Image 1: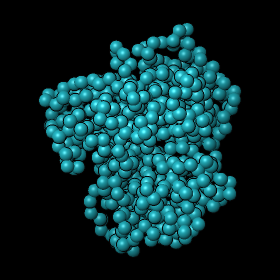
Image 2 (image 1 turned 135 degrees about the vertical axis):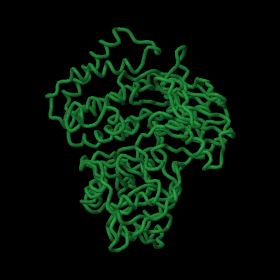
Image 3 (image 1 turned 180 degrees about the horizontal axis):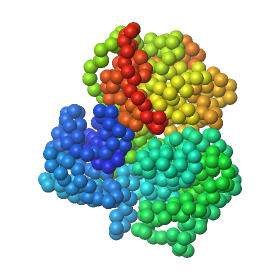
Image 4 (image 1 turned 60 degrees about the horizontal axis):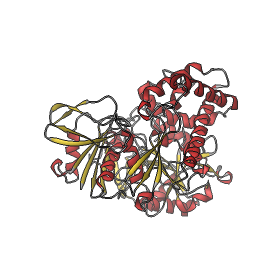
Length: 565
């Protein structure tokens, strides 16, 4: 069966599954330097992408769209304006069957839509090792406009059992409360932009402060009072739980929070701690209340990008295994829609996939003034060690999800204390923003605690004290790092680079940050990277490109509010 999944709203994308194998999953932001979180405006892109991989629309057996709020949506398709009906955001009217299909017809095209939350659940489970071994798993979905719902998916029955919300706080609570305090006050970024860009910045900035128990207690009291004011004394039935309830609770909390309880940095750290502690406590309680039917847990939704909360959940040991896909936010929703159909069809539940199933590099030629010479991965490692400068690396197909994992990356040695500042300046980012380490899996435990394999950069780790002076560029203000580990199977090319760099330097890691224009998706081609002009060395597929001596490329300006990738 050939299944095509599409998300037409923000973080738009197209994914194709052929007999259980992921052919591609391409987000609109990764095409042509599109803006971050780009939606699908013209569905002709579906036909175009299918054609690039040798498929036609007529060959697709199941065409599936991600659900959303406030439908229908108007888009262009085939040169004409069309009105597209979608499934709901979380549930239907009559029941809460998460995997209920909603069938529609657009002229001569029949298609199915699933709830947005169903896509999150399905993408997490189908990509997990639990699906491959046909094990049941809990799945926690927490998105910006919805509460943290816990589900129990059983591959034997094929049902996703709704265990209800852990509490009645939207994922947007994190940045909405934080915007009451500098440097994230209202006006820092628009509300629409903030939900996509602020959480990562806040997560980095909270290292400036320390949680204050009085503030955490006050936030809990405010939540309890706001929840009672909105919900009353009795619990709501599932069909009464929606975004509006969460917005009213959040509004009351924002209005009632005293601004002078602590210094602004400590207020931000306290907001982070309040939500993280509540998440772990309620999740632990709910799983135990359910009898701990599974030792597995998937985390998904935009909030699963919070590496500090993820670490706390894993450390709680409420389950034995925690899985987070590299696309937990809406970047994985097109794929999630297709995975819903995969689960519903009964043709298998485990997806055969690679994190490098994004778009291939586009051949747009090389600008005048650049010279090319052969350069193996080992020679690239020697170059990095000898010169100590960043190199922009583009190779293979792009990563799925928001994190650059070595295919659309800027790599640099981590041994110089000023390298983090250099990279942040190159990208126009705030000085407090961290730079992630990309490390040999076999050496990770020597440098980091716990240092367990984390190939997708989704958990917080401590840098061991004896290494902090050796790799200062990847040490965050609080001594932590967003570790990515690599082995020979994950990515043979990056593994070779790191292995050779380790051999000649005794350092098993490099700095890794995304290669992209500010506020845009990953570079789609070499030309874009070279015309950006801020790094004079670009490596791709065994070739080093360097700006010729005397040649000048005027660097493109950077927006100082670019997002950490």
